[in-house]
Image (cartoon, rainbow, N blue to C red):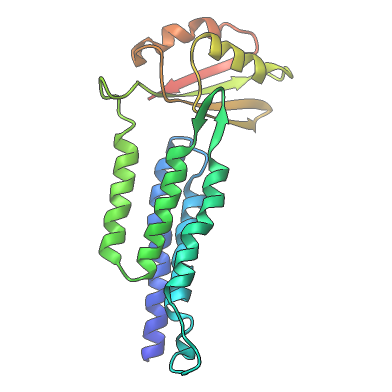
Length: 225
């Protein structure tokens, strides 16, 4: 019974780690960031799993005088291992860097997964709430501190250079996307852009985009904050 109870608690920890990681990833996915629900969920789940292995996986080898174990060694390697994933999220383009916040969030998600695996439920729950709130609230348009931001969705025609023409037109309007995602649906190419720094107040964005909406290679355009 004790063995079964312990196994069920480990499963509960894995479930909670996936839940907490998914909540952080949901906030990122809503903002069209590079890493979303699946990435953060798997990162947190894997960190929790490795923490469980590090803490309990070698219990059968304890008690042997010739064997000395350091239960923190596997856990310490998790922090190093997340570096390759963070590097894959960060991009450099147009003399700017994007993805830093998402990469930092993924790194924090590893810590939350490890905390759940160690049984620190309250700390991991608080950390999840803190990360989600910080990433969400710091996107608000606070005068003197932050520039207004918006999301732009553009459906393009089948012209082969439509995406390049859109990119050029946005640069001319001083609209530099922080991230861009292309999807092909219903025979049309859709571009989803995150505009972190607008050159105008959000209410004036429609007026700024008016000339662009008249371009023949653009089928439709939507934007929101």
